[in-house]
Image 1 (cartoon, rainbow, N blue to C red):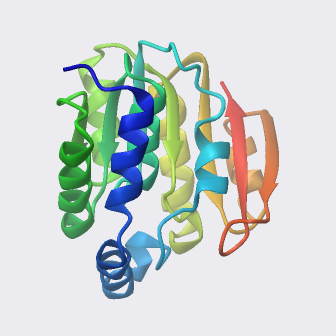
Image 2: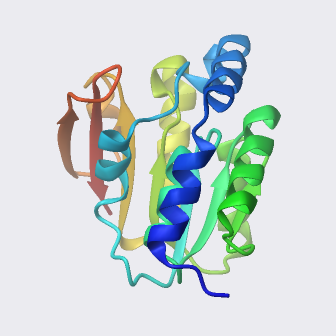
Length: 205
């Protein structure tokens, strides 16, 4: 039976239980450098992250730092024809993401990979099976060395299709120059209602 977007959103809301938040909190505290947050993204930030992607989009979307699926679920509901590859290095959060996707009934449209963003993107580039039009990232650049952060942004640029968009959220504007080194066309949008307040970078290739 084909599910309506409304029914999917109801299942997503049901998945955001206190137990789910506690699981994210525990995973975030144990591996803070990787996770970069101790609570999942709220709807205000999620809306800004996925807003540039048309609902009728049918191509490839790559999500980096997918966590337990707060953005992945909304993205799958918004773009039912898209192919989504979600990357999460924390195995606990990756498993939670798979569980939440199955519970929401995404019918295998989303692949969750437990690996580093660099490895996943390098493999996509090596395969040459078609570049992603959208790469959205929640990876905490501030927890990386300058060298590793620049290397990640470089591989994102190589993997992104010409004219494609890289969407990155952070909790500061400190990384604007790093992103502009590969993406001259960058704009930022503050999300003050998120906890904690965040900023979203939209970088066009």
